[in-house]
Length: 389
Image (cartoon, rainbow, N blue to C red):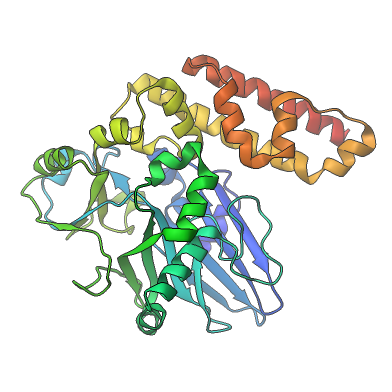
């Protein structure tokens, strides 16, 4: 819990909360893609959709899904020559969907679900939870619909009698989540209407990550035979036409500040990323970076360009925070007669469309795109300074 509390003071983390008469719920999410930041600020490793519940008596309950884990070759600990010394236990296909975490409410006893950045009562975008704690999150709705249609709610309830958290991937048939960066509303609607929940893993009551048993759930990721080396596994992934795989190691490859996170490593397919997700132009790579960061691009684009993309992602997060602050102070803006124009004004009016506005307006050259975002942030800062003056 101390690590998560530290995240409230880290700008790379986001904490979204909902307070009800019976308890307060907060979900912690990281906003960085650079593994070195995780190494320096370990609280972020546990901020991947973790929920903290504070009941009326002051009791604290923590619900941890997966910790952050990394790509092969992305960190000093997941270099191929290091991984070759360790034994892989299991290998599962990495599905191209949305992570959903299920847990039992410690106060009400209800089944609760959340995504990485939103509680069941948060909408798909924005920060305001439903005041009556109804099911609003579109991906949560998709999971509950799947459970009801397949008569699986009771089975999940029984699993939660023995487990701390249960992790699913909500997959939309025919629609890859990695392509949803340019049509998020359409993807959310599809997830609600026809998402399929694949059982990924449990976290047991002792805190350890556990694999689900075979045939324990109607939909589970395909399990592959574990190869003898990480190089061989990387080659298999490229030839399968899938997003990638997740390797469960018998002994954790992570050490030092990363020690203690789940012993998992992603092997991503370059072919899938660039062909299936459409990342074949600078515009599409820029759109992908703004939406989700650059961790999946590591080793796939030029290192100098990757560093610029990291800075672009950071500037865009800064822009989101600035426009969010302006939205909170819109009444003061009107009262003082301060005019906001252009892209910033459109972002204030319709924050859901800000991503598309930035992608459409930013230069295709990455350095120029970075300068474009820096100028926008300077404008936002000047407006905020006027409000504070």
